[in-house]
Image (cartoon, helix red, strand yellow):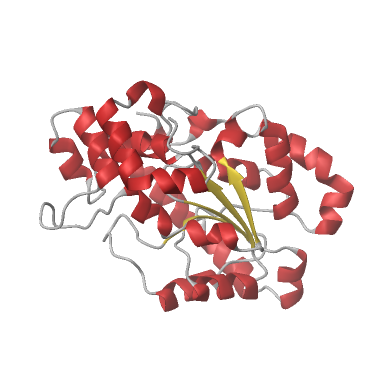
Length: 287
């Protein structure tokens, strides 16, 4: 097993980085935050978080200390209060890159604005999300509260169905809503003017260079981008290595077309057909 795949190694590295992070935060002035705002790289799980982090963390003024902010951490798999999450946001250091699976709440948005944080949100075709999630929960994260349920299902087809429809209350000790409900916790970020939203498919497809430029522009101050934006975009593009993520499986778009059965397609249309149309991934159920 490669070291980057070992959860204890990752946690050890993250812990070691907290000392310089804390020192940076405690010695920071308001001017430091103005000249070097923190950057939040946010997404729903299995939507390209680590790819987004690679792009942003490649910029020389920014540093990823390993911090990750999840509204509902894998352990104990309970949603943090809005007040607690806002306090964590207010502890960002200047120039810090923070990965996140952060639900939308007005209090979270207010805290991010107060920290002058640049917020980039990446989203993905939910049909590919459920494929990726079914594999991840079954084979990649044995510490996740849903791992036991997905592991005991007999086929990958059943696991994909569970990722689409969720798990009925009482069938498992922990709640697992359907895919549309899970995404709705994040969807309002797409309507926030201060948030730069990008599509995973554009980051791994033909629009990659333009999309990376959009992310770099959001993460840099206007003065920085005006003087070094092109060079920093090239640096960020060179840093993209999807296979370096400990959750990497295939790293391409459209895999659902191979893995979906008719039953999966029908279930997805029933649960999230309107949402896919709203996100621009489908037209009038014609898929």
